[in-house]
Image (cartoon, rainbow, N blue to C red; front, side):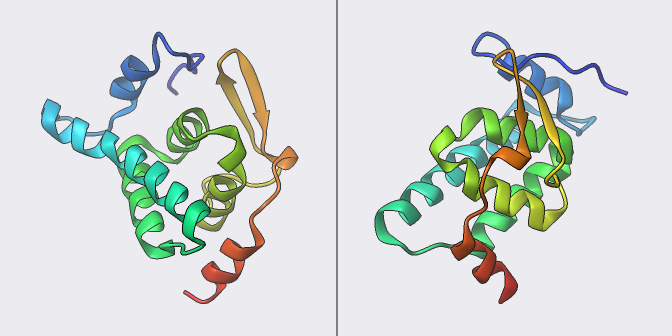
Length: 132
């Protein structure tokens, strides 16, 4: 079992590297996978601005992150990197994928615990996911 470290601005990249599940890791591969978080942020921003959600593309990025970082760390890093105002979108996708449930406590993000139950789900995303 991996030790759970507090994610903060000083150490999040080092912790991400420790959780990266690729024994033959090349820095460029890690960078490409980590950039998926930026893509996710961008897709969420576009959704907020235009109302158009690219559900499958978001799912694909999150699944790939889950494959290389594991579902627990993927949840932590997304809640760390994605602005709090968009946590409802992330929660909805993570529940759909089975990465978290309503009782999950995401530990040690900037010295605090995040109670998933305290975050609402995004009903528009739920409806989209039901149609997949």
